[in-house]
Image (cartoon, rainbow, N blue to C red; front, side):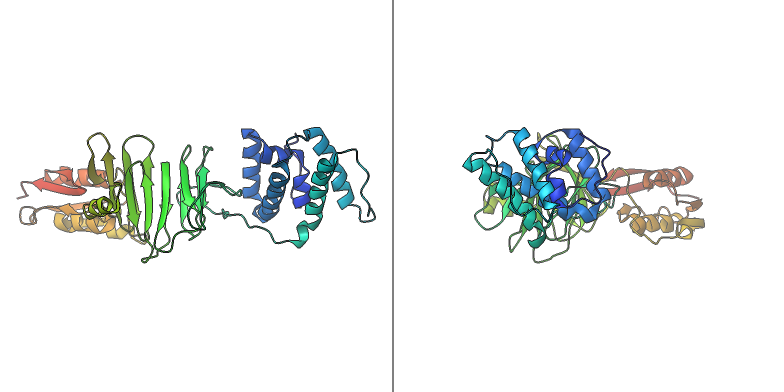
Length: 377
């Protein structure tokens, strides 16, 4: 197979008769799959052609296992010649049986009519991941099961090292990490949006207050209206980390009444907070994320530079910048002043600098930071 072939001028008919593309659609060679996924990223304008060719090959292959690959290759080459030669109006007589001849004619008719029929546009849109470069599948996910309504349950698994972006029908985006799997409907219900995750993914949810978004992950439910967050559910413990907005996390119990009761006791998370559900002990541990990020995008360097400023002012500035509750006794620390620049260091390093300067300590409790000290003279 030729991996150096120039495909930019190819149409759907050309892809359908190409050996390397057929190996992608009908085979499982990782190298071939990787080649076409990267090629589709570099040539997004060709994605509809690829998708149409893929569907054609799958349709005609489905019930024709008795036809050899060599026979199909020969006939596809002949068909390609006929398509590219307008003067040829009559097909050659073949030695195929009636059913094989009908199969070949079906391919020919489909290829000839490609330009006249509408494309079934690909489900995944070529896009970029907000947390870094990511692949995007141009191929529809396999339909695994049929729901009672009109929606089909789709399943996408990321078998690549790079993150894989899945765009849902409400424009929400899910960035799957390697080895992770997402199950989701091609059309959400009227009153809710529900998906199931195995592994790790970053969610960017389109806001819709009347239609909450629910993520099932190993017995844990995460409920949002519109936000961005990450879920890690590879092993027994499940971790949810919030980047923007607010989410509610609770255990997933069977039965509507139990589910409602669990939701009433949900752990609410805001930006820079996380919660880990420990399956063995059936308990949630809420905490500050390991590396909190600044929430105020347009914050300026001067806003975190302090010249002989009260420590209370500095701590309150950090509270606003990171959205994390920092608790301290203002009366005890009222005589403590500090001159420092806190622009480059991670939050916990900033707190370490402050506490060492004024002889204080800090600890984390329930996603809050508590600063204690004897004060300053």
